[in-house]
Amino acid sequence: MDVTLTKSERETLKAIYRGTRDRQDAQTGALADALGVAPGTVTMTVKRLAERQLVDHRPYHGVELTAAGRRAAVAAIRRHRIVERFLADMLGYAWNEADRLAGDFEHDLPQEVEDRMFVALHRPATCPHGFPIPELEAVDIPAMPPLYALEPGDRATVAVPGSTDPEVVAFLDTLGLRPGVVVEIREKHPFDGPLVLRVDGKDRTLGSSVANQVFVTPI
Image 1 (cartoon, rainbow, N blue to C red):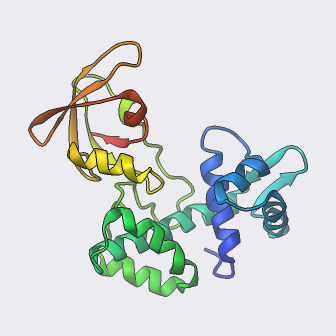
Image 2: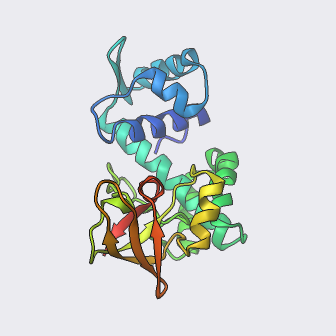
């Protein structure tokens, strides 16, 4: 990864990557909303990234990652997830606190430190939220379906995004639905009806709106 990337450039690359999972390009307005900054700020950052051939940007047509930009974006996500794992495993922070804290210092880490952290953590496969840590030089991260996409009889491991509303996280916790937990779908009611899941030996019921906010790795 290019160690000279600024915090805003790295965060913008991550936002573009996430915004283009289901489409070819991302609009600057959508990127501004995702990053919580003014559209003009995103435009300036995108221009810098385009000058470095990390993105293709045509005015009024959106932003698309180049091959180099895609590697840089995935590397930035990898770094964030390794730092989260360090905060959770080594410093004892809760999984839903690690995301917020990781953003404060991940951008200042030398690559050597990131590499040593990964080894010290015994090369973890996932971040504390349950999402995969991509390999070095990876150009993509496997997509994870929402919990609601599963069908009766399916089993999967749970992942919960750091952006999830704290009240939803607290509710999921009462059901035992935490990152890394294995669930089995028992029933799925029609017309966007609720799921019945087996969690830690108990059947739990979860509505479709919340089940679509939880992601899974099918087993």
